[in-house]
Image (cartoon, rainbow, N blue to C red; front, side):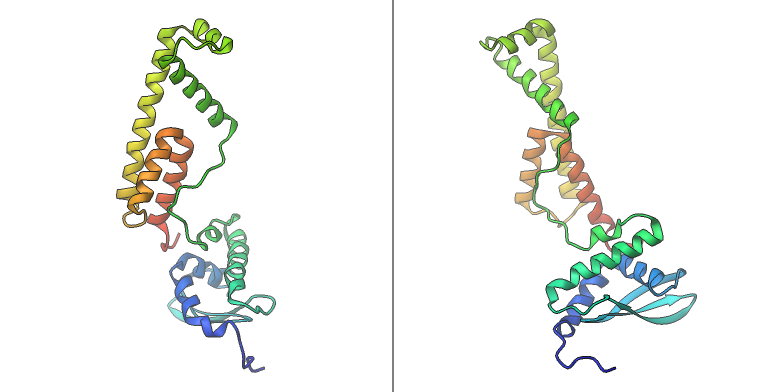
Length: 224
């Protein structure tokens, strides 16, 4: 059967292939799972249309060609990345039991975004800022804060406050290493300042997210 004359996806084939070939681990998972070439070592997407895409892979020294279908015809280029992601997750779950590769399909943003803060992190922040406040404003009229100050003692509050401030400063300095050194060129100057400031204020929940984001930039494009 000949392909449709007016294919809304085929005209974007070159840019879509370039986009996906920048993620070789995902292309390789397609070849290993959908092409049934578990020993494939390299794969390249060569064409995309509304029904699927073509891949060339290296398998045991042989060049193999395979066709992967979307399962239904797509009608807009905006649908393609979701289709790629669904197939990546299917292949990754089948091959590894998880969908790590599917996470690489959508580009990461270097901008600061609010992470989910668990109860432990929320409690730590509450304790930290309570200690800092009591250290600098010990004459507060709040009965609850006065009770905390009297129960713990001013010297202990001072120690906790200084420890919190020191840890947050260290975490912010560490953020500079990950935004400037580890992810060279990914974070702009504004992003670097924003990450530094938000980690200085909120600490490790943001630092852990930054570390994960930065290390992904090092490993993207590498075959796992």
